[in-house]
Image (cartoon, rainbow, N blue to C red; front, top):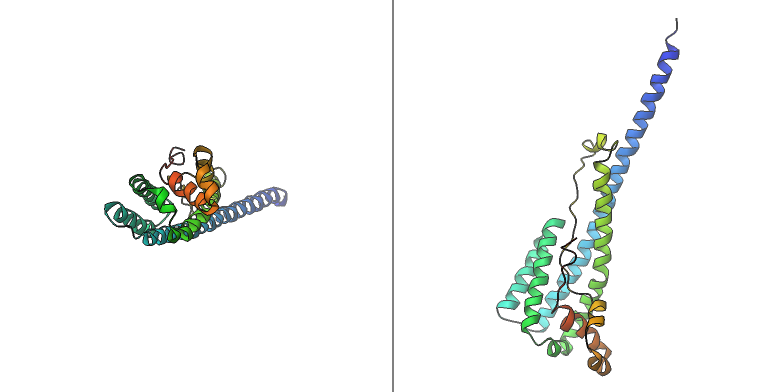
Length: 215
C-alpha cells in the first residue's frame, strides 16, 4: 500500500503553513521598519524645533531662572532617547515656555526684529511635527497590534518583536487655533509678520494645551 496519498496532504499543509509564517514574519519586520522610519522623521522635526527654540532664546538674550529652565529643558530634549523619553522631555519644554511667556511681555518680544527668523522657523516645525507625530503613532499602533494578533504572534519572538511606545507630548497651542481665539486684529493691520509671530508666541506660548497627553 502506497503512503503517498497520505503524505501529500501533509506536505501541502506543511508547505502552506511555512509560507504563511514567512509572510507574517516579513510583514512584521516591514511594519517595524516603517515605524522606525516614521520615528526618524519625528526626530528630524524635533531637532529643527529645538534649534529654532535655542536661536530664539539667544536672539532675545534672555536671562534669569525661567530662561535657564528652558535651556535645561532643551538639553534634556536633545538627550531624550526614544519616544517615551522624548514625550516627557518635550512636555517639560512646553511647560517651561509657558512659564516664560506668562512672565514676559510677549507682544513686545514678538515685535523684535531679531526674533522674527527664529519664530518663523518654529512655525515651520510646528506645522510639520504634528503630522510626523501622527504618522509615527499610526505606524507604531499597526506594528504593536500585528505583534500580538494570531497568527503573527507565533513568529513575533523570532522577529524580535518589541512594542513601540507612542509619542504624545504636550504641545503649544497651534497658530490656527490661537488665531481663532485671539483678538489680534490690531497687530494684523500693522504687519503680517508681526501677526504670525503674535499668533505663535503671544497666544500660542502663553496657553499650552494638553489634549495629546489626555489621549
